[in-house]
Length: 178
Image 1 (cartoon, rainbow, N blue to C red):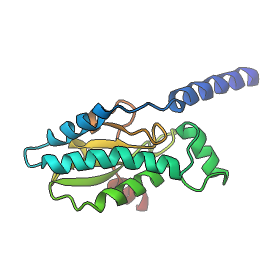
Image 2 (image 1 turned 60 degrees about the vertical axis):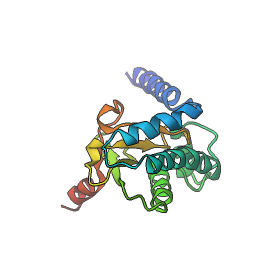
Image 3 (image 1 turned 90 degrees about the vertical axis):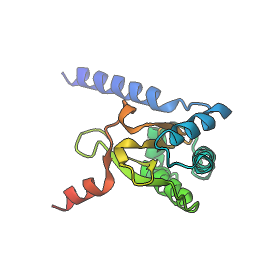
C-alpha cells in the first residue's frame, strides 16, 4: 500500500513538474494580441494605454525573470525560494512587482485588480494581477500571470483561464479574518 502511494505521488510530481517546467517563448505578435484584448474590454479603453500596458506586462515579466534568477519551472523555483536559495519568485512576488510597475503608468482607462485562486483547496494557492477597463469588474478582466511560466507572461480573460478559478483578493482576505 505504501509503495503504491509513493509511486502515485512520484507520478503526480512528475506531471506537475512537466506541466509547470516548460516556459513558453513569446513572439512579438503576443504583445499585439494582448493589446487588442485590452482594447476589446470596453470602448473607453485608450488604445495607447492598452499598448503600453501590454508591452510593460511582457517586458517587465522578463526583467523579473532575470532579477529572480529563474532557471527552472515555477514550482521548482518556488522550492528554491522556500529553501532560501533564491530571495524572490513566489507568485505573490511576481504579482506585487508587476502591479507596482504598472501602477507607475497612472492608467486612466484601465484598472488593476489582485486575484487569488486555490485558497480553499489542497492545491497551491496562486496570486496574480488582473486588468480590466476602468470601473470594470475583476471577472471581466484579463489575467496577467508572469509566474506560471517563470517570467514568460501568460494572459487570458479571467473566465477563460481553465487552470484557475480566480477570486478577488480582498474578498478572500476578508473571509480569512472572520
